[in-house]
Length: 259
Image: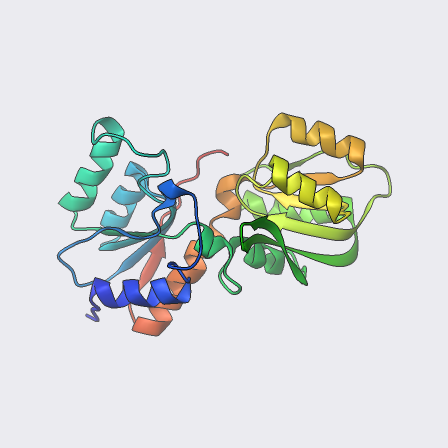
């Protein structure tokens, strides 16, 4: 059985994702969050670090869990309740945890939004959803029937257990200037950027109710493809990359949240 030290894989990921130079929200704590006795013999990828994904990774025989949302997404918290249970489960299964949030979103090859664009047959030409010095999403130009594009998104998202919805689509609306921002992409700053760049279609994971109302009145169609669904892409692609690079098998732990 092929095995590689966790430190080797972590160093490779840190460099690939530019962990040291990409500023993220403080609770993200990108990189190795929990070590293990190792070495790594099998990798599991998941969107979230949860008791379901930890159990799923252990059942697959993995001893490295690669996630987008790590242990500390809820901020600094005591080791009690569910948080404690997750940490205990990781240690009990000798399961290392590596988390990559905005460094993964922003990656030119493995970023969630870029990969979703490929899934939908769209070709990005620029970055979108700027956070400090990076772009978490992508944008481009095309000419497709918007209702048909929404249907395409819906078919894709249904594979991951999400029912896609969209803000009001005017009759005959065409998508000519679009952007994608995975996760909670319909936020104040993102929508300001969408209006400033004169987008007509924005594909996101989720957003607040008011975003659909505001978008309709500004002539923007927002497609809500699911926070979980839109962030299954990056971790799977990254795990596949590690498998190719180091010869270690991997699996995906599917644990949808309904959002």
